[in-house]
Structure formats: structure tokens, C-alpha cells
Length: 155
Image (cartoon, rainbow, N blue to C red; front, side, top):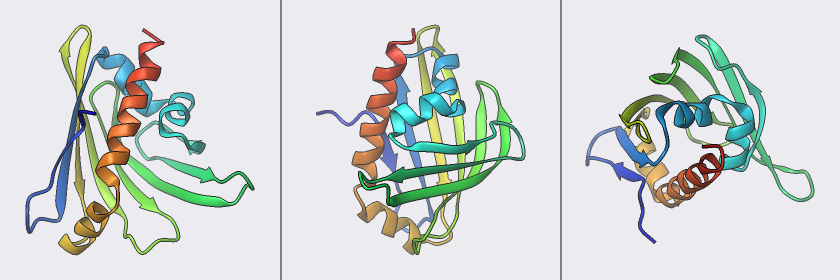
């Protein structure tokens, strides 16, 4: 299967860039990142809190069949411009990974296509490289494929 979500990680830098073009109108792509109901569907996690606004915050949680928490993430939204950009922190709780800073930019390509660019800054090159050793790219591509499929039904 083709990996449509591209990840660029330059050697020796504590950042990476993720890009993906979607066959979705810009407004619908942005909505998939701004509305809890859609985030839960494509990310496969529960949204405990989501304040899609400047100085808002969020918290996501995934549990196993027995109700045990296996993943919890949170952050603060520093910038929120509809259909343009979201700047936020991202922290995975109860892990050795430090907080990262994410810049999400949404771009209209045509009336029916859009592009998402995510620039992530890590505390160090070592932390970035540690994340890249996980199945990060594969997981991101799978999630974006689900986003495309779910949003297609809303067109």
C-alpha cells in the first residue's frame, strides 16, 4: 500500500515535517482536526476534552477492552485560525517523551483537494529519533487514510 503521508526528518535536526494531500475540501479537512466527534472516529481514541480555540486545551485517551488506559495525550492550543492553522503542544502522558510543539497548516489546493503540513519540534534530536523508531510513520499514514475515508462520507 502506498504511503501517502510523507515524513521528512533531516539528520541531526530536532524536528520533522509531515505532509499529506487529501481529496477533501479545505473546510472538511480542518473540521476533522477541530471537532471531537470526527477526531474520535479517525484517531480511534476518546476525546476527553477539546477546546478548539486560542488558549484552549485538549486531552485524548485510548483504553483497552478491560477499560485500562493505554494512551493518554494532552496539550494546549496556542493558535487557532479556522481553515488555516493550529499551533499546539502535544504530550503523551506517563512516557519518557517530553512535550513537543506542533504547527499544523491547512492549505486549499482546489475546491475538492487540500494539503496538511505538520512541523513538529522536539526537545532534542535524540527524542525525535526515539519517536521515529516507533511505528510512527505507519500509524500516521493509517490514521490519515481513516480520516480520508470518514470525511469522504461527509462530502
